Image (cartoon, rainbow, N blue to C red; front, side, top):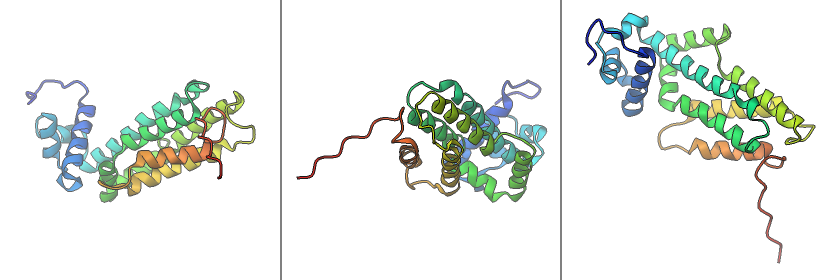
Length: 208
């Protein structure tokens, strides 16, 4: 337990990580400021000293995870020409899925005040699905210029389809449900599997 009056490095991230562990283990109903600070090994009142209650904390947790994935997606254009287009798209899609597990999404959905904070922050320009979609479109445009996607590829629609599906998976996933990784990989293969830069499909067996 951290002693009173001693600064804790990276406190914000420490509390967020602790909240995610509590959510994954016990669900949104178990998330209290006491449970979070106890999991983080901090003084009980520390969360309320830095956040205006659990609604603000939950909103900031979701926005932080969005921003983290947006930063990762922002590096996609620099990867044009590397690995395969499919590998790069799956990587960023899974990063978004992993950054916001079903328990975290469930927390925001179960707290209307937190959801309102998140929506207002996104409308004000906080990085979220739109920033990720734009980064994917920019990346696909770069791959198209390199000839790893056909000239006629509608890159904005591919990005929208990928991000929209990930959003759907985040909203509807649950413990024991279908593996979102497999669903994401199948979608990416469908979207760009027949283009240059994607892993070639196995040849069909001849008819006998």
